[in-house]
Image (cartoon, rainbow, N blue to C red; front, side):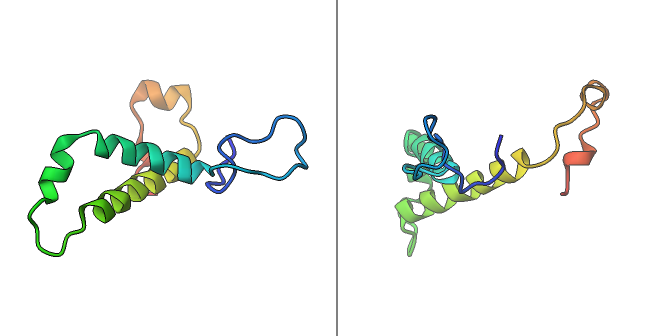
Length: 95
């Protein structure tokens, strides 16, 4: 997987020199995260009635935060089978 979050989510298959169109990985993941938030009726209720809180902006901000966290995690080296078997996830924590 290309770790570049600005790489196309669906790269052109016919000619790699062609122009890249469409969403980046970051845009696609953020859109999917936002869709998930919006499909949960409790998310909007959580912020409803709070003074100075734009619910849509808050949901968009959270979607991007989760997206960036996922992309950062995906850019880390993959755990070895031995680390998985031992439950050694410390190499992935705090980085």
